[in-house]
Length: 156
Image (cartoon, rainbow, N blue to C red):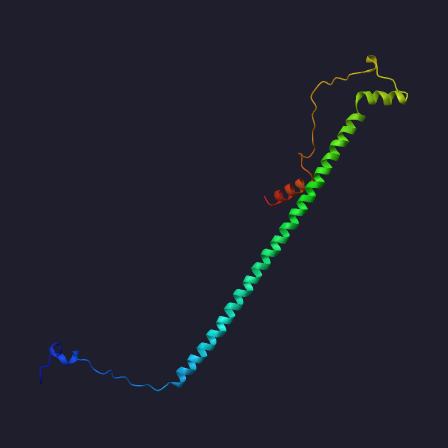
């Protein structure tokens, strides 16, 4: 046997013609490629359609939210106007009530209806010998509280 050492074989470093072999087209691989291309195209259409639907839905949501916000702001302004009107009406009615319940008006009304002013000997004061005490029977609970207490006492 000949002792061949490829480290010194200079033929390995010479330029050579590439040995390319033309392969036959594989029909199965070509069919798989066409199927994959069609599937990929359908997937792209589905993705684009989904993105478009989501974008339209989002824009629609923004529009309806803006419309709702505008309606609520108008409703708040209307309520504020009504509140201001009612407040001014309250002030007017309080002033009218104060005018009708003034001491002068009460005396005038009493004299018109044949009443006379009270004299000091007509006023009687009643004194009580203790504080006002209020006692609530049943421990201060309403019927629902007593019912709940009865139910909880059953399970104890």
